[in-house]
Length: 248
Length: 248
DNA sequence: CGCGATTTGTGCACGCCTTCACAAGCGCCT
DNA sequence: AGGCGCTTGTGAAGGCGTGCACAAATCGCG
Image (cartoon, rainbow over all chains, first blue to last red):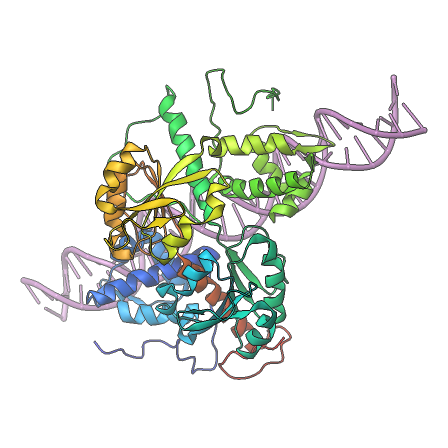
């Protein structure tokens, strides 16, 4: 089926973008739907039912339908959702059609890995600049990019109109880096350094702390151990295996 | 409420651990509180007010008080919380006093970084085994550990009584690794591979997808760009069409 | 010893999110 | 052409989390 001009979104040619007001919880799940859809598209599927897509994305089908309903009616009753159309739709909503430029600050262990992470390039992001404060690392070439000194961060990030910055520095320097990013016009920051960043209210910050994730798992380990040791604790495994994901 | 034994803490020798039933949202914040408390302890503070700790952890003070109230009354009205006591308390709840053993599967770019991540060791976790399916990587030494083949994962993980496994493999092999981990008795998995893992219901899975975080930020970028272009938008000079010319 | 300043712990209301259940719509088959 | 089965989209209900506002409790000081 060739794509028909179904509604009026990605093109934004009708003058009014009418950007939908999506719940945060929905936004956080859209990327997962998108990944599942790409996978389905590779297998040749043209349409998916909410049940099928929900299973592929690890969520409840009702939740998925409600999420998708927030972006408009892009499904066909009795049939399901057009995979290609939905991919376009979600990519447009997420702004992934812009192939956004990202810069990465801190080329240590983690930063090095992030610079080479294939998942970025394949999902709509281009890492266009690397920075580090260590003179020994400046000049090093990683994945085709040359590491530059953080002193030049503000100038270069502004020149390249970078909107998203990734911080992978030690905790001590994270705030200074964030300040420089903000000064350069960056309005979204992904922070891997432990600690709280203080930024203007128009800047979005998302934090990923690897140790925190482990600590949450540790809690559940502790809880499980306590329950099995307790008399009244439910220790018997329930019926059958179902994904047990803990919300982020 | 009527809980007033301040002295008895982690030891809990009176037979009934009485594991509190904490809300998930609270659990997810405890590690952040813990980090802030450690930082405060280093500066020599003996007590903290809920206001102070909340600021250090980046949350609302009322939320912090409610969170802490779930673990019991460990504050003193008019004074604040005893830093050392609270640290012990949270570490006990999170099960960090056990110094848990963790194994890491997949020593690619990201896995390499995780193996050397200092934040793990410093926060109650020991990486005790590394695995990879690539024969060229087996035998390599990273951070004092020798990479072993994933064929031996199940045996070794069971021998070492590993309870937490970290998956940093390509998406295609993640499910197989998860199955092996589960077979070895692992009951908590931290998954960095994109995709949904299917595991028994007694196994906890937490997922970290770096690209998803970027996509969420991308959405907010898209939204901000749309708002500035709209009539009701905020004060922003850039009126160029669809490209991002962010000028601050 | 009493009083005021300070800070915790919590009852309550509100809003968001999830889940259920079902009507509406669509395509296919007879 | 009509009916039947399937799937979406959504109204409503319930649960969870957040934040306010205040009573209870503790300390220090006159």
